[in-house]
Image (cartoon, rainbow, N blue to C red):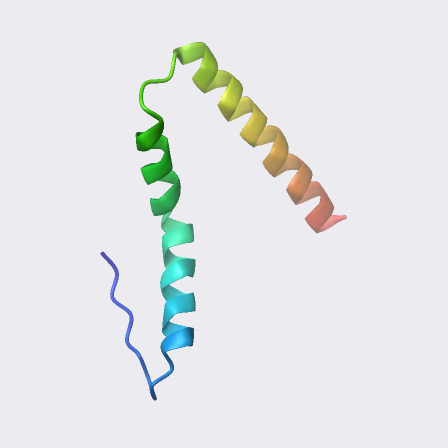
Amino acid sequence: MSKVIVRNGNVEGALRTVKQRNAKDGLLKAVRERQEGYMKPGVKRRKAKKEAIKNARRNNRKYN
């Protein structure tokens, strides 16, 4: 669990920092994967491949 210090009463900034840290750690993604339950190995591979394609397209758009 990460801690964030609220400075000068800036709660919005602290909340944004918490959200960024959780996204970076992949905490929310891990929770969602656990809620889905068991996934067959083939389905897991297809999902990973789809995610990789999505990330590659995003990176291409970002750098081009």
